[in-house]
Image (cartoon, rainbow, N blue to C red; front, side, top):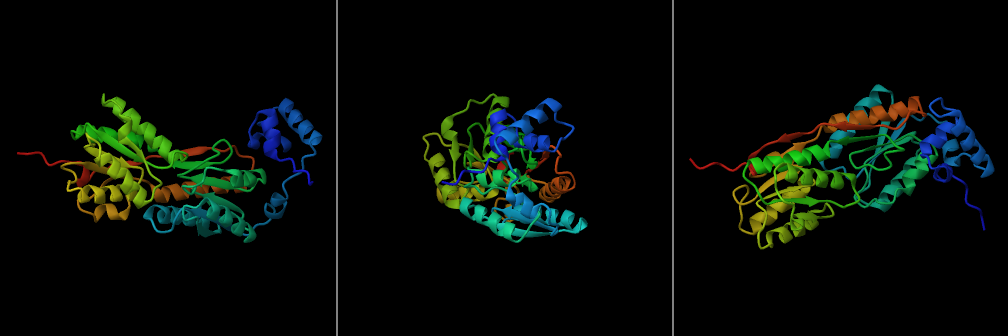
Length: 341
C-alpha cells in the first residue's frame, strides 16, 4: 500500500496552528516566532514533509491567466463581479478564464482540474450551493497556489475573502418591514452550510430583536436556491394558520418565485404580503410591483477580489484578510403600502 504524503494541513493540525502559519514558518517568515519556526521545521523533518508537487508545477509559471469559477453566467450579479475582476486583471496584464459550476460541487471540482491543466496562476471563486466539502480548495492552499473567495466563502483563516455586509443588510430589511407596519416577518434562507445563509439569518433574528418582535420558527424557511424549491417554501408559509405579512429571501431569484406563488394564491404584493429581495438583479425593476432589494457593489466586489489575488501573487506570505463591502437597500413598490387618505 502506498503511504499517503504528509501535507501542510497534517503538520498544522498536529501543532494546532493554521496551514498558512506552517507555510510561513517553513519560509522563516518574520511574523512567526523563532520558537514556532523551530517546532514547525522539526515536525516537518520528523514526518518527512516535502512540498506538494502541484506547487512545483504551477507556482513557478507565469502564464498571466486567472481561473474564475462562479455558480452561473446568467445572473447580473456574477457577470458584474466578473467585469470587475477583468478590469483589474487587464490593468495588471492578465486575463481570466471563467468557468461556471452550475451550482454543482462535482462540476466545481472538475473546473479546478481543467483550469489547472490550462496552467492558470491561481483562482478567484464563489462556491457552488452544493459545496460543503472543501478538500479540493485545501489542496490548492497546501500547494501555495493563490486563491481568493468572494460572496460565498470558506476557509477564511487560510484564504483572502471579499463579502457583502449580509448580516447588517438583513437586519435593515427586517427593520424596514417593521417601519412599514409588518409584524409577521418571514425569511426564506438558502442551504445552511453557506456563509450567506447563516449571516442573513443572524441579521433577520437581530432585526426582529431590534423591533421587539418575537421569533417564530415557522416563519424561517429554507430552500436550495432554485425557483421550484423557493416556491415550495413560499407555499408552506402561505399555508400557515397565520401566514406572514412580509417575506424576504436570500436572493432575488427566491423572491421572484415567492411573488409568483403569492399571486397564484390570490393575494397581492404589497397589500397582503410585502416582499424584499437580495442582490438587486435587473429584473427587480421590470416586475410589477417593482421589487425592493439589497443592491450589492458587484463590480467593486470583483475589483477587490482581484486586488486580493494580486496581493498573493506579489507577496505569497501575506496573511489572509477578509474585506466586507457595504450594501444599500433600494426601496421600491413591493415593500411599501400606500396609506389610505
